[in-house]
Image 1 (cartoon, rainbow, N blue to C red):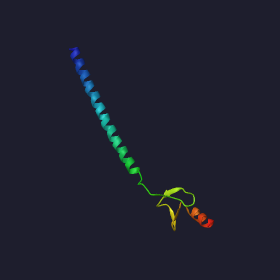
Image 2 (tube, rainbow, N blue to C red):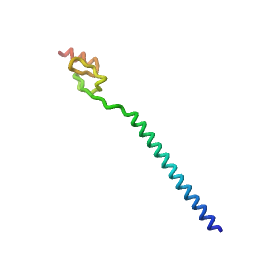
Image 3 (cartoon, rainbow, N blue to C red):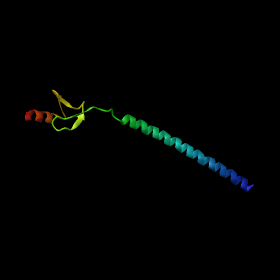
Amino acid sequence: MFIRTLIILIGIWMLWQIFQGYKASLENEAENQTKQKKQNQAMPEKQHMLPCAFCGMHIPEQEAIHRGDKVYCCQEHRLADENQR
């Protein structure tokens, strides 16, 4: 009788451990999917980069200062380049 009860308790314990492992894997998978979504949302769109005509530093096209066919990273470099002529 004692051995039978012990075997049943061990079986219940094993089922419990399997259930806990399965539950943990589901939680990890949900966490990973949430992290993946956050990373995808956080990634900015690719932008076309242009070099500054004065210093050569590459800047996004939307932030660049255009003057004729030249592109500058800031007003100071645009003015400095115009003063060098």
